[in-house]
Length: 125
Length: 412
Image (cartoon, rainbow over all chains, first blue to last red; front, side):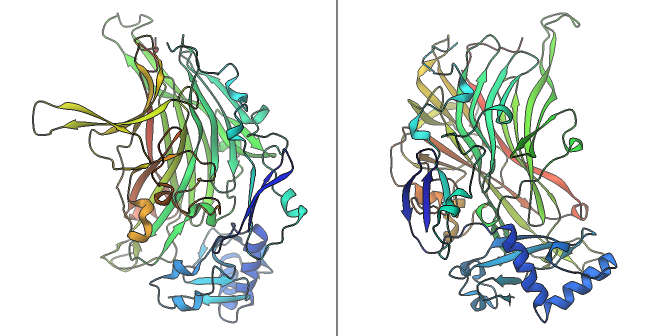
């Protein structure tokens, strides 16, 4: 749903609902997505190992890395092997992640999507 | 000089047009709850003002070395980033001329050449604009929005404004070193850092530019057909990709009314005779960039002292004209023209339930009485070894140039 509020008059000017529109992810959602990644049996240990190699310390939580999330919808996977795994994205709240470590190296997150609704990592391609 | 029909007595605090009242827009996900708390959570620069706040930090008023003056308001929005409102030019010895009611990015579409990775950067990310530090803005001034110093304002030298042979070297009118007002913000979006920059020259020229720096994708490696080897020998082929940058320009040439759009072409090439051909663009539609082609937005009533319509020329000269497939029809024109609608903000993923979702669908046959011009400038990036982190900044942009705003040069 989208509501347009005139903050001067205090009136709701319009309310419309349409499928497929999603607002940008919040900072909290980006960190939640990193937490999902860390809890994943496959990607969590790999991320922790890369972090340890980069910093010499153990990764304690999503606040230790710089993260950014962007909205992912099913049609963005069109043509990619494994696209069907992301079929619910759009109805579900899904994000792609960009993760940078304190030594400025990037974590390769180009093949994964985090489904925040189902709280799991989807591997595409 | 123009007549004085324009209402620019106080150009930077013009909130008088009810049509432009900016409501706060809240796009709520399907699962979000409509609560009073949710509504209250989205204050703009000032939740009290009906239009964009243009007081204090948000007001820009600079007179350049030759006396030319630029005034406008700035703000940073969550989707578009840097947004300029009420952009007004006062040439030396001249009167104030409104150029743009509003100007901002309208999308950055990035597509990788193997066809499986693409991003609409605006809207998919949240507010990414970075606070700047004094070293980011040498000699300039940092401006804050809600206490975060997001905007750098500088006046920079731009070399010769003119050089004359008509006077003795050393005499006051022999040459002028030009200056320009420069505004920019920086936003990390994914692996890239984008710099949104506007330059306002002492000759009235506006240059909109988007710079891209940061890092190449850490995961998009392909082959020699769709990439370029950036690792040792021929092993790691960084994937070629395109940056299609779109701007939304809500022109109000000397006020909202009477703006018309024209396209100019030259008939014939490979000949010594070239005729200028003018085409009126009176309805919504798209146009394609071409050599020697330009457009202008003119006020059909306001004229300079030579009785020529005051107008602003749009020059799109440096674009790779990257077109996507039919599902990406918003990329199919270099210039789109639409009638003003507040809810038409982004060329793709507009995501406002009151309007269509992409600019090609905004175009639905309306007559242009209050034109919005959407400009697309593309860069096909074939990575080089030099682009390894930190990638040198690359720029893409276009110009808006005064055409008959003044009856003579106003530089000296």
